[in-house]
Image (tube, rainbow, N blue to C red):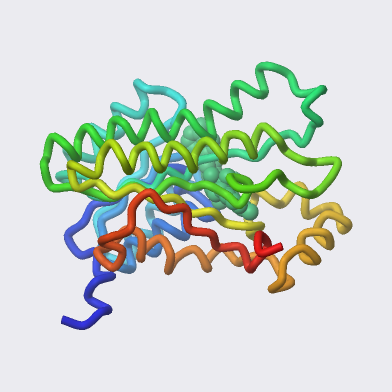
Length: 261
Ligand SMILES: NC(=O)c1ccc[n+]([C@@H]2O[C@H](COP(=O)([O-])OP(=O)(O)OC[C@H]3O[C@@H](n4cnc5c(N)ncnc54)[C@H](O)[C@@H]3O)[C@@H](O)[C@H]2O)c1
């Protein structure tokens, strides 16, 4: 067997949350290209359907569900639909997330804080728990990948936008990942997190309007650039596949070196 066979996902079924666009869309494409059937969900119906069509053209089974990942009823209906139509769930990528409003903490409304924690952290528990229950019941193991950030490790250094609620939620994602890995290792479920630095997606579009913020990020990054969306594809396939069979509870940083300094 060639080492490349370890990255083959033929016969696997994956869910990618927030899969309509950006990093989620790229990860869905990568999993399909590696051989998996992929279901995506998102709040964005039009973009979600367009991405699902793009996946189907590659020759794998796919489906799109309009799901709010903070709503238990919608998550349960979607998981049920995926299990019924695609037969099972082997891989979950908990990717859906939002950026913060950039307010200093003393200005941050309680509601915005709650929404951030619910969307970027608790949703990964709501979806992850339910998918893990399915995996444990099936008894065939599985893989969960949570989308963290370099802000799981450090507070955003683009003053005055320190984005503390976002950083706190992403720090929670790192610890949730370790906790899920500990609780579910006995069932053959591996759980890891990806921690990207600044990537060229819609999420960073607002801050990229300010040349001084872009310049700050590029200066802080040894590779002197933002990451391209596609650069997440190799890492997600590595973590989703037997190529990473002894890796669990890890936070894998991909940031062009931003957190070296
Ligand atoms: N872009 C970056 O620089 C960067 C860096 C580190 C981490 N991340 C993380 O990567 C993930 C993807 O971000 P992106 O850059 O592709 O941004 P994006 O805004 O393009 O994609 C996020 C997707 O999640 C969806 N979403 C948001 N809230 C949702 C909800 N409640 N229910 C269902 N779907 C919801 C959005 O509609 C969108 O399609 C996020 O978790 C983000 O925090 C991004």
